[in-house]
Amino acid sequence: MPVVRGKEIEVLFSASTIARRNLELAKEIASRDYHDLLVVSILKGSFIFAADLIRAMHDAGASPEVEFIFISSYGTGTVSGEVKVLRDIDNDVAGRDILLIDDILESGKTLKFTRELMLSRGARSVSIAVLLDKRTRRQTSVDADFVGFECPDYFVVGYGMDVAHAFRELPFVGVVKGDAAE
Ligand code: IMP
Ligand code: MG
Image 1 (cartoon, rainbow, N blue to C red):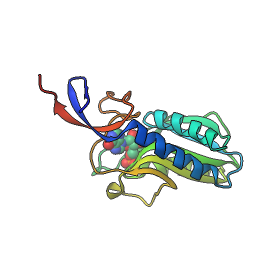
Image 2: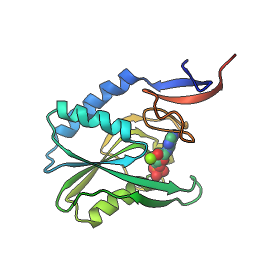
Image 3: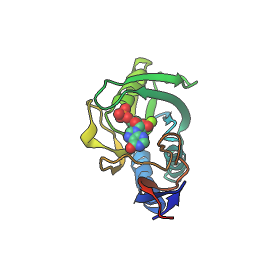
């Protein structure tokens, strides 16, 4: 098991497994009849997935533009979360097909809010791609059009995702198991 910052990390999705799946997702995305596609990566958690997915999309023949929106959500599963835009996109979305990219779809509050924001600005369509889907935690009617993997209900880290700002740099998705033996 890899040890990072003195903690053992159990690998759930390896770097090569993710890379293979990204190619499949990219082909699916490129086969859709999108016009004037604008990818919107939701920060911070999706930055690595988005970076890999858009390059796989290029290989699959798609030519999207790319934007970033910084969204924060407060609250836990039991408390209704407040979702806010901390940094908005610069681009006009009116009349365009939008592909939102996020790391995890959990309650769905983040993606519901962001999708409605894009639609209220006149987007022609809004699709959603997520690396991981924690379906059992859903509290909204949001579903993703493109899902990398179904995710067991563990708190996961790596490949852009953090716990208390740590572990984003891991090239795989894993679960922190505890202190490594000396
Ligand atoms: P939702 O609004 O409840 O769907 O929350 C989704 C957001 O919560 C994701 O964009 C992640 O940033 C964060 N999140 C949810 N589960 C995890 C996890 O297991 N590890 C790290 N971040 C998570
Ligand atoms: Mg997030």
